[in-house]
Length: 100
Image (tube, rainbow, N blue to C red):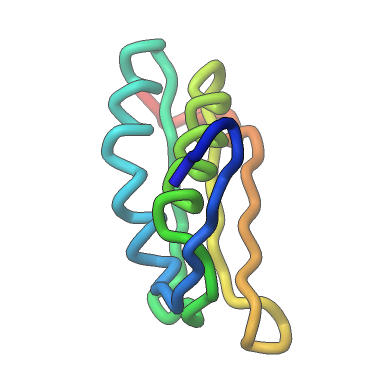
């Protein structure tokens, strides 16, 4: 919730995988319109994180929108300690020789 330029966060326990999966369709559509692709590898059992759902959704959408200028790959995996999540946004590898 934004009030007079300030951002008020309402943190709660959220399933990060659900938020990531919710952002992907729009991000993929934007990338496709720009002639690019968004690939995602979202681990099935990501830990729940404490976050403001709306702010997290917006942040992920902004990251993937920026990535829509090139093919990108998003990886969401549990951190080594099992209580954190690692998000990696990187250029997608070029298609292999068998790609059409």
